[in-house]
Length: 182
Image 1 (cartoon, rainbow, N blue to C red):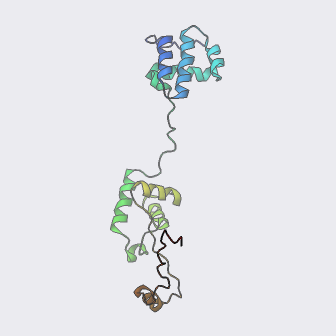
Image 2: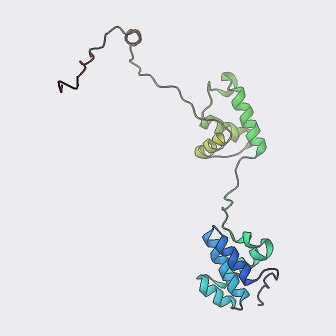
Image 3: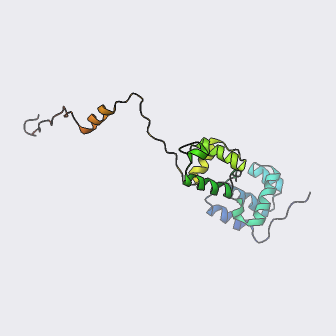
């Protein structure tokens, strides 16, 4: 198998200069390995210098040929695509803004599990609660919940406390003068 030729518009000194100016360590290392190839080293020697396999050197050469030195920067992996598409998100926003109808939806406020069930019925999309929560946060929604009340809470005692029926039991301390030391 023949080696893929490296682009002719660069040379070893240009790559070393780019490696020196680079803020990305892995990119600088890759540029130096390609500079060694420009200087006449074999791909096997370059792989040994970099501590990688010849296949990885080949991948670096392909990226360098396509994009140039910027092609050797580490990029974030794309990850798994989202389960919800734009139509799902638009329908979700619409139903959240409209709010639930007790007669139709059977709930008085939306919970994540209710929205998940609605997506399953409407679009046949199965999504987990944590994933739906992330999607809702990305749409700008936050989980709000009412503050719980104890079932045996005495409303009269609460109102009396709010009105301030009792006086504070503390008093201001006497001012200490610097001459007395107290």
